[in-house]
Length: 164
Image (cartoon, rainbow, N blue to C red; front, side):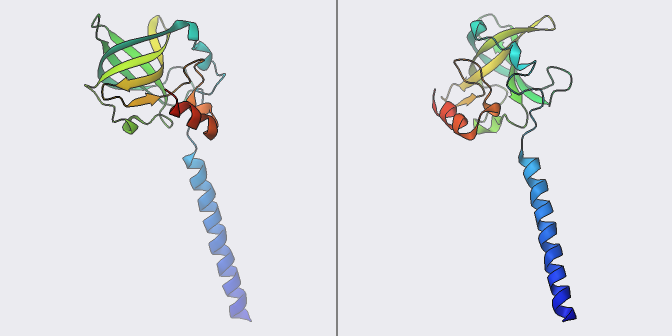
């Protein structure tokens, strides 16, 4: 009887440890988008009336924190093909933007679509999408209104990312 009791206790402990580990793993899988959410102060900077696009060459991958308290983000610096100026492009929170999905790297020729904002007396483009010359693209916002992909439901993400 004692062995059976100890066996049950041991099994219960193992199951409890597994549940705790699984719960911890699940929370790590959720992307940190603090400050990047739809409706946040940063998100409200996006104005579809300021939509624009330009072509150029990626000169740097940037690690950014646009406003105090925001989760770390990813951006790129692009040399504009027309005027050779360096433009800063914000892509989104680092936990939600996957540059590897299109193999984006320094030296790539890209077309950037987004909306211009003025941050600290600097023109910054909040990207909707970045298209590489090979046709692959990284879409981070909905084209018509700039709604961020990372704030969408999985169903909305699928629909948005499947549309050009």
